[in-house]
Length: 260
Length: 156
Image (cartoon, each protein chain N blue to C red):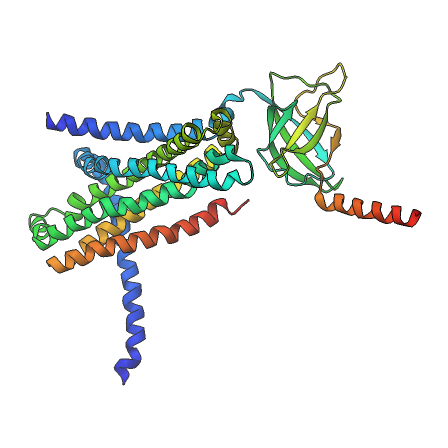
C-alpha cells in the first residue's frame, strides 16, 4: 500500500535526478570540449569523420530541397503573378527554418547514430573501463573531442545546406522556368536581412549542434553494454535528438521572429 | 602523409562552410548594401501617422534607395511619430524637401519617399524635414468613401 502510494514520488525523484545528471554531463562536455582544444589533432580527426563524411548527404539534400522549394514556390506564386519572389521564398524558408532543421535531422541520422554506436560499443567492449583503469578519463579523451567536433561542424553544414538550397532555387527558378535573374536576386536581397535572418539561422544551427552532439554522446555513454542496448541507444539518439531539435526550433522561432 | 591529407580535407570543409555563410550574407542577404552605404548623415521627420513603417525600411528618392530608417519613436509633446533616418552622404537634398510614406506595390513594404524642393540651402546632419505626408490608412479611406457617399445622397 505504502509502496504504491510512494510510486509517483519515486518517479519524480528519478526524473529530477536524471535531469540533474544530464545537465552535469552537458556542463562537463562543454568544459572538457574547450579543454580538448589543447589536443587539436583529436578534434580534427573527429571533424573529418563527423563533418567531411556528412558533406555529400548535406550538400545533395540541400540542392534537392532548393529544387523542390523553387518548384513549389513557383506553382503557388504564379497564381498571384509574382514569380520573381520565388527566390525570396526559397531563401527565407531555408535560412530561417529548413536549413538548420533539416541539417540537424540529417546530422542526427548520419553522425549522431555513428557517435552513439561507437561510444556504446566501446563501452560494451570495456574499452572505456580499460581507459579508466589507466587513469585516463574517457569523457575527456573520447567524448569531449567528438562533442567539440560535432558542435563546430553543425553550423558549417547548415550554412552549406542553405547556400546550396539557394543555388537549387536559382537553377529551378531562373534556368529551368525562366524567372528574370535580376529580380530574382534583388527581391531576395531586399527581403533577407543578413543579421535577423542569416544570423539567427546560424545561431539556431549552433544550438542544434549542441543538442544533437549532447544527445548522441549522452545516450551512447549511458547505453547498456550489450548488443541490444547499443541498438536501442542508437534508435533513442535519432528519436530524442529529432524531437529535441524540433521542440527547440519552435521556442527559438518564437523568440527570434516574434518581434514582428 | 595521411595526417596532411586529413588536415587538408578538414580545412577544405571549414573553408567551404565559411564561404557558404558569406555567400548567404552577401549574395542572398542585404549585408553588401548595409556595408556599402558608407558615410551617412541623420535627419528626422515627424508624421501624423506612419502606418506600417518599420525600422530599417528604405528611404527612396525617384525610386532609388538613398537611405534607411534608423528608428521610430513617439513624441508625446506633439503626439506625432518621430522618425529618424540616415541618408547617404553622397546625395544632397534641399531644405524644403518633403517626405511621404508610400507603399511599394499594392501590398508591399512601406518606405519613405523624398521629394526634393527648390531651396538653395541643403539639408545637413540632424536637420528636420518639415513637410511630411502620412501613410494612407485603409480604414480612413473607406471612412471617407462612406461619408462622401452619404453626403452625395443627402444632396440629391
